[in-house]
Image (cartoon, rainbow, N blue to C red; front, side, top):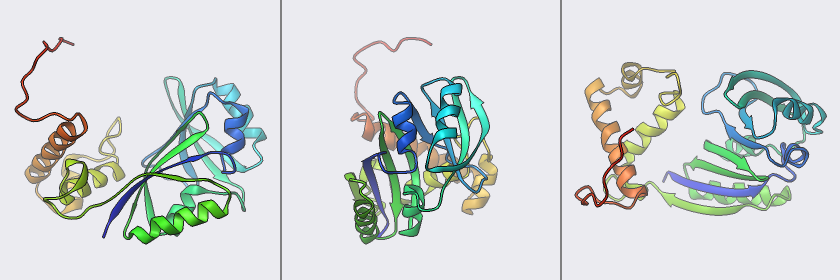
Length: 222
């Protein structure tokens, strides 16, 4: 049974622990799609010069290179030294997939997908053994199309994950809707309708509203 887990833990003792110690204002977000042998991480908060200095003096980072920039944040390809607590690799080794990862104030929040709940338990144990104290914020199963958590059916969820994995939501898009529909082996129209239903389900679920809820305040123009 496929499950989703949101896990929170301190960066202390992990590959980016001393980086957050050097620049406490640092924020970090994992790049969803990137072709590299390391990890694509968007870093922001302090100046680029401060980030470069922290990367250069980090005891856990083996190599790093600047790939891209966007306003006041910078995308780095980062490779950790052997023996470093690499949470991303631990997730993979335990049969999971990192859906998203972000950190601020020295605290990471990971959303992962696993095929079995036991994989979450194994990951939890390994993080604990490495002196990383994880907290499971949320854990749920993708049970059936009619009983999916967070308002999505299993197919809608899988479609959104595929869209994220293939860069459909990136700016600019890394895959077209036609290419994504071919990847999922469904028609362009079916993909469009499934995405619209998924968007509607997420909005009504996450914002705690109903589709026929009355509008009590005027909607401001852009």
